[in-house]
Image (cartoon, rainbow, N blue to C red; front, side):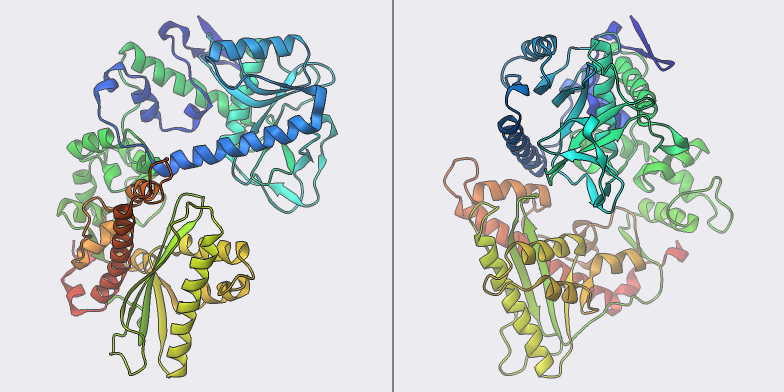
Length: 566
């Protein structure tokens, strides 16, 4: 059976394939592997514990919103049972629609077998003229300060009452928009679409993390490249993904080949794709995303082909991102097994008389449970100085917890004391981290959340600290002065400086698993051994940043090849 939507042929029924909204924002190769029967025997990466936690947090957020709306809307509210098979929940949704329910919570839409769609909406809202529009609930911000967003109060989710909000502007969230488009197409296929929306519009709503308004989007507005509407963009993407999935399910030639992109870092299929890409020495191992796509189109599909090009001439095609000479140097470094190459003969690394390396450990979005610091005196300690070495400021209560305020306050008090002592003795001070985004975020968030607690700084004090030259992001230094053939993560770069972690399983995702055991998050007693493991991992992280900057400041850096010499 064939379904044609806005001129796009969505053929799915033959293979019995159905996709939810997430497919249109996923890598095409992942869609293929998700539907290839042969993939059942292929090993996958372990589940990402931070993703699991985000899903749990999102479910709790949705439950809270549902409870508030139910209490406020009374007889207008109908909730579809959250448990049970999807077909029964879809039947309960159909009963609520037939009864003309004004608000349907937890709606499961009927399978759109013709087009190959499946999906559910947190809320369906009936318009005065009949028919429904979808509303989704997400745990991220959907607006920014400004004006122009069309909103209604959370507890009055009626789109016909929407008004331009003088305090909010839309924050771009393509995934939300495409999910609304998916649900809108499903509502149309079920015969449940709104009968009388404002002329020339097609509405969908989003309730975000702030949870005080519903933000309404016009899915016919041209916000996409080329002036395409959200529905038009969705139709093109869905037609492509359903074709990819159908080919995989039926054993037809694959329509999607692996290529390394940002999404690969957290994809369960990455071990499979990495093996295939490495075997073929695919060019995306060196240049990711769109740059790899345009190079392949120009016949440069392997690392060897890229390395063979002359960096002094014009590239075969215009390349987004880094300069062409850098891409060739990266390919040559990759061929030689080099993790880094220097851009310049001498690396500029800020150094000081008193140095502190800082590394924070958080559990997803829930909280920062550990601040680790390594104190060193490169020129030698003086009488009265604190002992050199590692210090940990931790809470072992499951985050989020008020005890975070205590550990953060103790960390800041100690760090401020070291800075003050350096200044009082006329010595320079510098603090280092690797990729300051995480540390800065939790420094500011902790100052706001625990304001007024002992030792906790004001937001202004934190802003002054992170804005000072003495707060040094070594990731930025590496990005500026090195080409990195295998990535710029600390675990990739520090080995070039001769550093190795004591734990062979050290890594951010594994630390999430260790944390769950360390605090007894899954019902088992807290595991002291996993607490020790986390402290050792954090101590090695700060030691790695120290080793990295000392290496970059030493004569040994001259042994790293210059990119121009490759």
